[in-house]
Length: 277
Image (cartoon, rainbow, N blue to C red; front, side, top):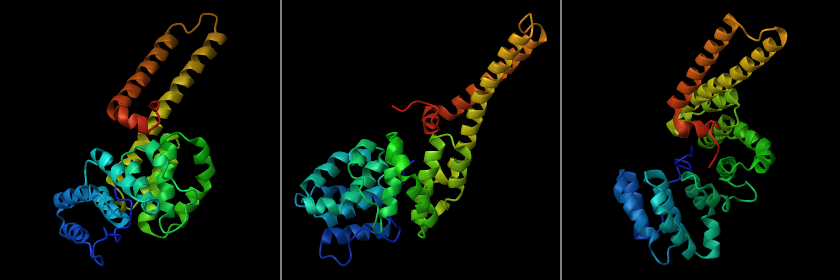
């Protein structure tokens, strides 16, 4: 569940204070809420041959905030990034991480993860890196940074940063089957700072995950019950016991099937109930 706006609400696309008329125009579109015009101009800006890191940053900020279809912009973004100097590429590394994180292209995002998570955007970068490692099932990196991640979530003073960290932890706990921790993380997220998927649906998904886990555990208990009685009686599970166990198994299967059908493959994968691709 990626965060679509990976920067502070006060961090507007650069425009004012610059002599670049295109950046000034882009700033104006953003301030007036002219989303289509802003997105169109941002894409045009990425096609500028000698694009600067300031222009690149402004274009990506706009797309990440306003464009509902980010994936089709990948080729244009990567070509523009390749035209930047090595120094400029280092300056916009965070924005490349943000873009690939938002489109869930975790293999591409991985190359933009910094070695150290410091500076004003360090904790945001850590949250994005955490999502990347989780998506790639990189247990080594997750284990290495777990204490830093939880400490960062507790210490973050900025509400937006705090929300992003909580959302990443909630997603992680959801996939690892730690349902209560997932629900607790999601419930702490202020709705105004992150998308509704995590703040609203997160706790509900955690409950569904716990229900699926309870069904799986019940199947194991029933299997043990059958085995125990087969060992204890001369005629294994005769009469009422046979029908009772069949009825229990039927009800469990119906509950489990209903939950899985209700959730669908996408949600089941988020809950770790389907293998990753």
